[in-house]
Image 1 (cartoon, one colour):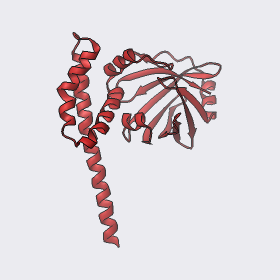
Image 2 (image 1 turned 135 degrees about the vertical axis):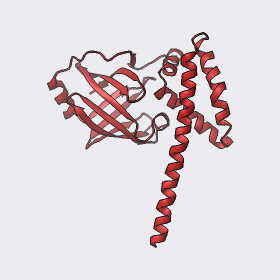
Image 3 (image 1 turned 120 degrees about the horizontal axis):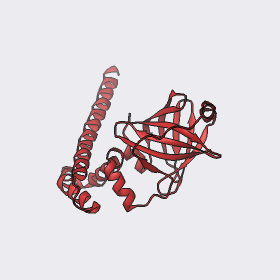
Image 4 (image 1 turned 180 degrees about the vertical axis):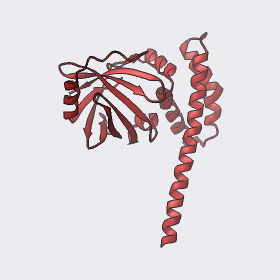
Length: 220
């Protein structure tokens, strides 16, 4: 019995190792695509993306079975949005933002008071608007941040305060197409409360390790 359990654990750990190695390969392709897009300042945006894809993505996809290629492409597409600011900027020009997200070049000065932040902590339920305008509901409770999307899918992340007005969330799992492809387990996101209005907080989101800053509203 103990031998069977040991084999099962070993197989599980080996499977996780292979998954992590595969994701690292995909992220390496993401970095190469991003670098190529950033360095190409002469072509129009669509051509810049197409050249980068032709140079790195299609040959990489060919190393997978046909049944796997769509999943791999989807993962790389969303990882590019997370890890490549230039790609994200291009997408925002091609697909206008219907939410209230704004890409920032630097973090704005906070206008929030200590009392505002204390009151933020007392609330359990929030919502924010996605880039397509849909409403995503948030529950912050017992050290977890849970997103619930309009299609009833979810994301679960660890939640911890860094200081009185800043906190981090760490990705655990999701069954939502964009979130499960955009983040891998352990990816972190840092939030700063910068102002409070009548029915929302002004927030700044930093994608840790990716050099991205965005401003958005968390409604209550």
